[in-house]
Image (cartoon, rainbow, N blue to C red; front, side):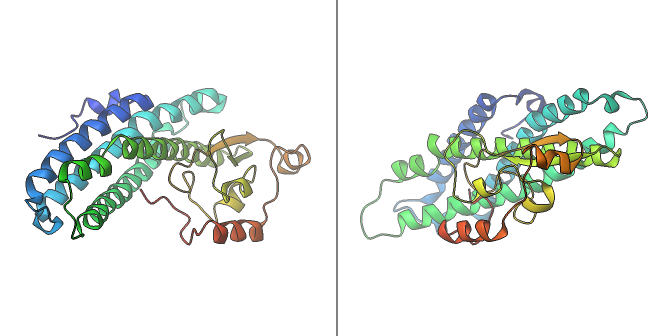
Length: 259
């Protein structure tokens, strides 16, 4: 039975909704993997079709978050901008662009999460010591992992929605700027160097937040003449050397999430 029904795509509207669903999914994955790992447990005992089902369930859940949470944010953005209320504005085209981004993101994240689960299981079980299969699965597919994925993918939903709104506004001729903005959380050393820079600069390092696991950054849309926004400190010019130095210091050769 699928972990998600069609109606669930409209139900995932809050972080709590998504966390509840992902905890349910991880519970099922723990049961399935426990059954196939064998005794003594060995990752090689898990059939390829089981890993395929895990990846597909992860993808469906990630897409549900992006569609449910992200599309709500996108609609709110469009409703807040007067030009989007005109009947001839192609709102559906903007939504389709957002859906394309959501599908690509959900596929990539599902593959990443499944690979990480397999890698962590293999590492935990590849030992001469006796290992508790149940405890190992609880650690790898437990609440902490669910909360990490939730925080990271909520950031992805916000970022994808913001960029769809930005591209839509640009296509209508609005003088709009997508500004990378820190939120109050634990930051890496890289993201502060992107803070208040606009799309031409930060897009050289990321498609949009999240830039890494647990990234809480957002994209804010600012309107008006860029020189005026610069003079008022609303946006600032970026420093490539500072970003590169921070990446090296953080040991981030790939500026992207590894869930």
